[in-house]
Length: 280
Image 1 (cartoon, rainbow, N blue to C red):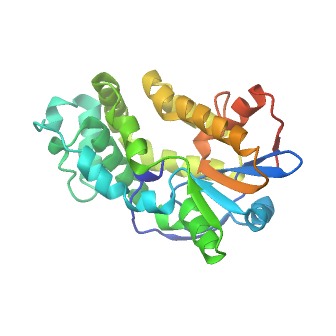
Image 2 (cartoon, rainbow, N blue to C red; image 1 turned 45 degrees about the horizontal axis):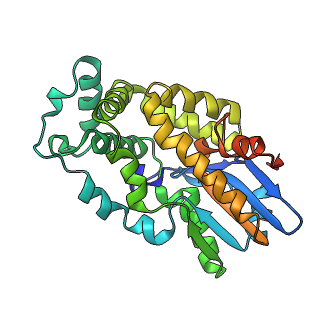
Image 3 (cartoon, one colour; image 1 turned 30 degrees about the horizontal axis):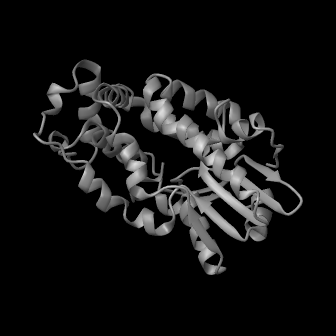
């Protein structure tokens, strides 16, 4: 999700990436489904191959969040994230989880976690991991696609608002929020390595590897899977089906985790009777 990653510095790389992309088409409509990484190392080139043709052909770009909503993300986060009354992080985490949290916090400025909800602390930790892995949202797929489509005066739309996206976390029950936070903290020591492996799998278009990583992570907290992945994928699949009634070519670019597995958008569309072709 775009909101999980904040601006950070990035090391220069020279990487050719060919992420997975699918196509749904009928006589007068084409919808390309591109799996994205919201933040990448500087110098990652993913715009070649079939993606280049999809960008040129598309009349419209559809993202999880349109540019105006992404710009509001920080404001909405700071509105929803505070916890009243504050709760010390030592009352939420212990053992390996607390050790992992402390080590990650020590790699930069303090998180001031006592004043934030569990889900918000997890978001701050995710931002720090991205920073430590030298990933930058400025190099992420959504940012670069937005620049390309704005320069070409092409339409850019979105599937959600910033509030809707953050409310997915805010409305999780307390036990699920705590479970997500504990897991993130327990896995913090290997998080940079894991993010690197995830990015590499995305760049190879290795959907089996992506699915394995996504499932291992989200299946640890089943209630979160339903809210963050499955329910959203169902809504987005319905959007694609409805959009097929209008002529034109659309590039729909969403987090790669939403396009893999049996409850990914391509699989849901196929289950609904649509023909989905992997084109990259």
